[in-house]
Length: 505
Image 1 (cartoon, rainbow, N blue to C red):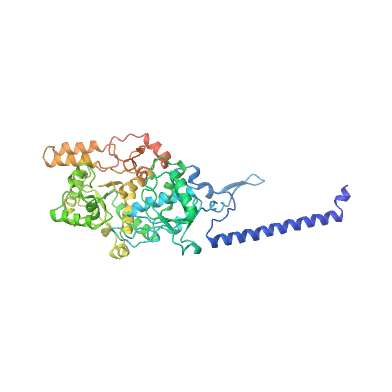
Image 2 (cartoon, rainbow, N blue to C red; image 1 turned 120 degrees about the horizontal axis):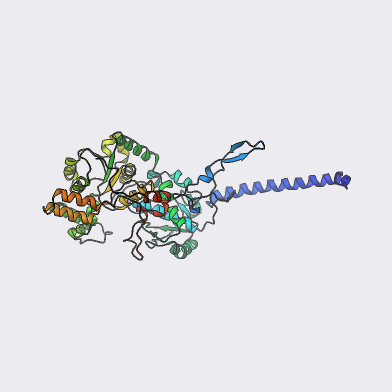
């Protein structure tokens, strides 16, 4: 039998088998290459080489880092000495492409930022290929900036490649077709998108969401989707390199003097006009703001009782009111304050009281040269991005209103380690301020009351408030992305904040 196994015919059969195996391997490689080539041309998801790498959807840390995919692997040689093997190459997640999603964001920087995070999450959940978002150019600010002018497009696409396929433009065969356009119902959960939206996308192949703000619920979503929202917000959405560079420079200049706070004064013309908040304005200013509100047909609320809104805590504090609050909280006169805002309504005259009490006030124009700022001057969204970078880096962040920037920055600072944000209780504050101005409270009584009022409003770890059926009244996901805070929240819950330990004295 041994002689038969080693006979020439057996050797020939073995050679023929090896040849067939080699032909099959070569054919597979050729077919694989052709498949990848046509997938790229047609804009289809590329087939995987191996199983998809871990992602934030698979659990792990709050933001969803892919550390296991990028870390080196230790191999053991026969002699028992360990060495580092090269890390595995990044791989895209394989999924069936159910269609293409275009989104037209509306609003200012932070409203659009949150919307982009939501829409990436929707695209991931429905297995849609997403086109790089379009930004609002029609709003009050009329900023002509495109996505790539504000955010790093390459980083956005690459950092999400294991979650959702993002392309810069539709494949050629879809570009002549008018996409089906619609507005998803606000505050909807994932079941709405699965049952109502997915059939529409499958039917039309390309769908455009014409409005994207607050289209995804704050609460009740699967944990993996909540974590993806955070992954997009805190990792994928990096600002364009030019914005990041200027932001770092501004923070560096501010840090040279040590401690600094950011005061987000939302006392701007559009805010006052659309909210109807005219407390402290002259009759001429009130008339101007009212005319502006009526000039915009899309703003439905026209007749507004300014004083009633103020007493309900629905108006931004005026610069003068904010000055009283800062003094009452105990900030020293020499505190360095960065003003994050657009043009203050009323100009420097309206900031006079604040400058008198806190002369160490700075703005972008004082930290950057005219040449550095010139490319950004007519791009309010890019200017807001600079303010955003300084705001998340400050020792304390104090917004005078609870708009989109206030909420999104607060959430980002929580994610970075519960950095202090003072959430002003405007309803109680205006009551106290009126009592002080009517001399019904002494300064010491006023200061004590303001401190006591804000002892529990310093961004301490807390559960996000959910109110069934009233999404506008509950806490905003991006102000407190509780599901993504993980170990940092647990550590901070053990601390009891009984004093302003980070405030200068």
